[in-house]
Length: 153
Ligand code: ZN
Image 1 (spheres, rainbow, N blue to C red):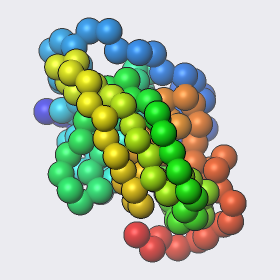
Image 2 (image 1 turned 30 degrees about the vertical axis):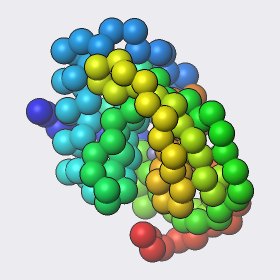
Image 3 (image 1 turned 90 degrees about the vertical axis):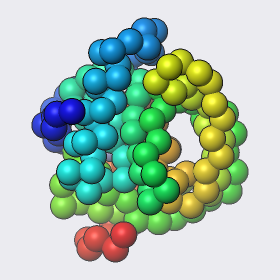
């Protein structure tokens, strides 16, 4: 595994749409391993491939329940609203209250290409929405409804 540098706001790659994964090969596995290492080293709750400069539809997340890897994720259902604080490893030092669904159902593949459906609520739902936004070139700053300057987490 290897640490990869995190792309920061201002780099136009963060505005680009990521491409679907077609090959569930060694290259994907190395990418996922590196992304997990990078996320843990930076104390993040989630990291999308574009944040390490790779325009592929994958993200890793850990909201305190263990590592989740999602390939080609898609929100298939969402319900309710939550307004909580968010931050992003690509937007250091900036936090804000965003509006997100309270619960989501996300369909995605694992590193072998097998499909799963994940149900998420609270922080996990927020995290999934945040990471899927990254895959469409959207930063959380576009979802901020109120500014907040301190890290609460
Ligand atoms: Zn982010």
